[in-house]
Image (cartoon, rainbow, N blue to C red; front, side):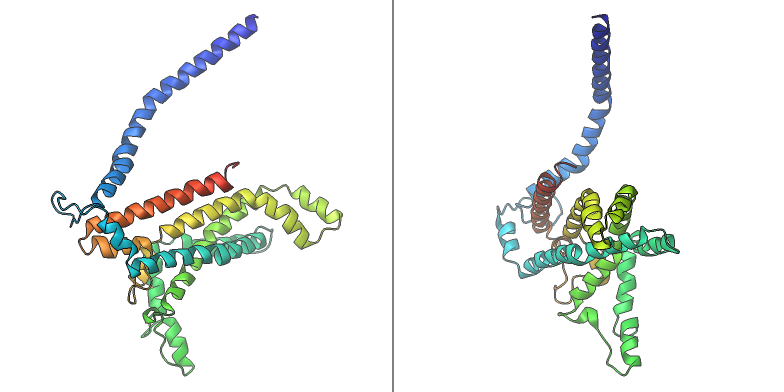
Amino acid sequence: MAETTVLARAHTTDARGSLITALIFLPPALAVFTVFVILPIGEAAWYGFFNWNGLRVPENFVGFSNFIQLFGNKAFDRAVINNILIIVISLGVQLPLALAMAVLLAERMVGAVAFRMLFFLPYILADVAAGLIWRFMFDGDYGLLSQISQFFGGDPIYLLSDRTWAYSAVLIVIVWKYFGFHMMLYIAGLQSINRDLYEAAAIDGANAWQRFRFITIPGLSPMIRLSVFFSILGSLQFFDMIVALTGGGPLNTTHTMVSFLYYFGITRMRVGFGSAVGVVLFIICIVVAFGYKRIFMKDD
């Protein structure tokens, strides 16, 4: 009885301590979150109902006109398709490539650490710097790709000026830039798998594919779900490299939703229209994030 009373008092003391800690640290955090997140989101949603150039107080209320114009805009439709293409390439090419390299480099082999660093370095590089580097590489006058073509007697290749192939070049750069990040996630996941499982499977006669299918994939499933989550959300917010690489051209064929917001809203002094784009993008990201976590990551 006495022990129960002591435990109850200790539990009450811990609860009071947790409450006091929450009362001390929670209000400042909520204040910062409200000022820098909640209020800007609310203001953006409010400005989306005005024809506003970003100067003075918005007065020209247009209702849902900005949103109606948005969904009838061919450049925005193309931007949405481009974001979907990034997601498809990320899930279909980038993540499988990252997984394959992770399985290969997770083994103790000569030069494994050096290769990990080599493949991870592009992710460390700033998006703008990476975009400028690849813009030089794809340049038709003095870029490496064009120089190689001319060396073998071909014509200069103006890849980023071609409406058909410009976005393909963007997708290539995206895979190069980000697959190393996912590779390192998978390597971390592989290192947490018990090696005894592989030894037991090998003794039972399981081949390499069977060990990969029945041990590696289930063991990596939480990390794979996290990687897919990062990939999808990152694809929806892709911006910096588009500005440096193509600027949305040629003829608005390489815009993403965020670059569309910047070029058609901010730079053209149509802040109300840009706010409407931001609201739509925010809703898409929220739905995707919470929907994915609820469906695929509810046990993680």
